[in-house]
Length: 353
Image (tube, rainbow, N blue to C red; front, side):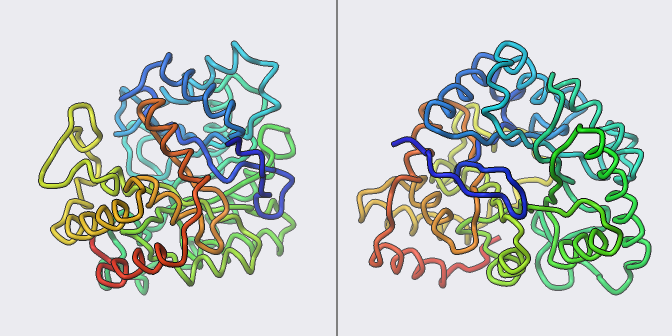
């Protein structure tokens, strides 16, 4: 089934498919031919939304930095007449990676520099959605969501507000120059969303239209508070890793490490999703899927898509076969009985990592 039904990203005129093609494996697990094949297949299925980042490919390294954008750029250079058919999103990397601007914070100058570099790699004149990959302050993402892991009271709020204002001013320069159309966040929080909105309204600067955070059956911390914030503020909520790094497919159960899969590779944050509770939860989700004649992969993706407030879900695959299975999940309808079976497991394992 073609995914011709489009949704609007926040307060913008960007109409995108409810499925977004993620690209972070391109340049690590996938080569140029694979990337081309995935783009072509996604477009043939009515998917018009591609997400990438300067940091990719994943796992991040000095060697793989910029590779994914470069591969998308090669496709665009050979298909320039189709640029208008694609909503292209990318991101500026945050602090902590020494090979990217010395590991420094996102600053106004960093945004100006990074946008130009991304445009060059992508071989395009404009970026539809330019996102800040993670905030300068430490945020409760990447398994830092447990109480006490982050201290909010020792953060200089005025300093971070000043940094956000500087970022918005740089983003305005890029918008005015026609280099980017809209701005978004990633791996941020309700305070971050609201501070960006407040400052953009106060200073008449570009308004963010979206946020992408990890969201899946093993990691629902954004429901309900952050997602309600997005709905009330007209911010598109874009789940990344709806399969929790692939673990919800069931392929890593009982210590399995299929050749070429992500968990066989070095991970920047370690395999923090690999816990005993996760294994128990995934086994039960797999049993629910089998009971209803679904695959575990399609169960996880269809559940994510039906959550009230979710805009477009970012999927990723290393083969067209996987991509086909992923996309088909968005054509499936979860019955009331299936949803209750899923939520029985979710209540038992609400925060398994």
